[in-house]
Image (cartoon, rainbow, N blue to C red):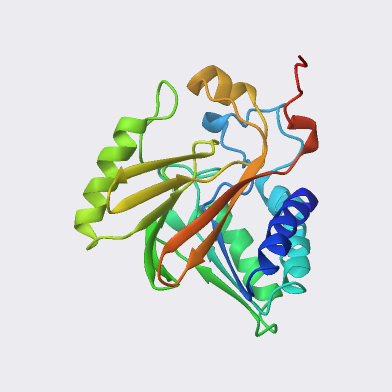
Length: 245
């Protein structure tokens, strides 16, 4: 989390030399803890604590520290919380997703701070307005992946959702532990948010997905939409090593 703060503020500081940046919108697309579902790679002996402790002892304190640090740099912060599928069983109620515990704790902790707003979305997706641009937020676990990231299925789903929900300019998703962007059409751009974890045996074996800890940061203009974007490398151990001449 310290890596996210340092990398984000480095970019923000550079852009503040040209114009003010007063408000930060944070999009959390889910899977903030591993959970304890054995069908998601959480078998006995592979995790050191259960879902509750993962959230209350690790994820929540880390997010509180990050949001609190960012609150000292921005006049206003608004966070959108989308639930992921980790620690969720298909037969359980939708609200049993572990991310809801985290978002509830964050909302309670920052409830007295009028400059920090936590929005919790209980459905699989939502549409929010960012600088006047309709943005579709979702996790993505309902899009099946057997042999890596299902790019064709994502394209098809997003076009269907675009028609169903009356259109939107941007879509932000998670789930696939990958940082990626795609121009779905001339009217829609999709951003796959990165992951805070590195490779794990389950993702490599089942999905063939490899990634490094990274996140994205965007600048939204009220007239032109997203005008800049950067990938934030949050762990220096994963920076590329020059091969030399």
